[in-house]
Picture 1 (spheres, helix red, strand yellow):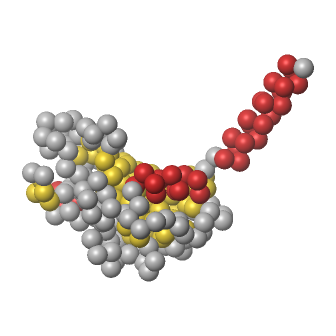
Picture 2 (cartoon, rainbow, N blue to C red; picture 1 turned 180 degrees about the vertical axis):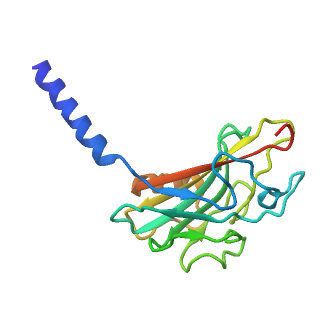
Picture 3 (cartoon, helix red, strand yellow; picture 1 turned 135 degrees about the vertical axis):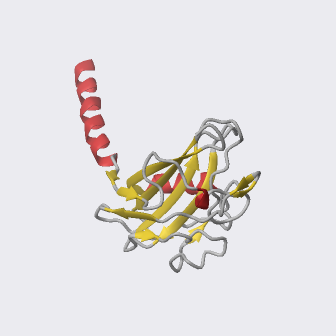
Length: 188
């Protein structure tokens, strides 16, 4: 009996792991090479940082079949908050889109495609908020992730938190890809 149960569990785990595995999307930026320092132009303006707070260009390719919409997040897991820091969350992007131009993450969202939405970030407003780690911290990692979703739009309440959006992204994800930028205010 145990052998049959064990075999059934083993077969199911192989079957579901393949079915649930997300396809890799190629994601990059001409403005931020993967693993490299983020230029001051893309750094936050405030909290003691003096960047221009312009969102970088981000592009992607190799979306999985069945992609009905896309989402983009920028997250700093190194922020000393206990929960990281959300710098940019964009969702309901059309699946035909190949990228976002530099400056698309402004607060008014006018450079985004129609029906795309930006969430309120940990800065307290919707739109891109650049890096600005505490002085003296080792350089932080800023993870830019593009998600391919199996739904044409995320149906969310007004002003959803990045955590709530993340939940719905992960429930609908069929592919993802990322790159990482680095930034520190001293000791680069």
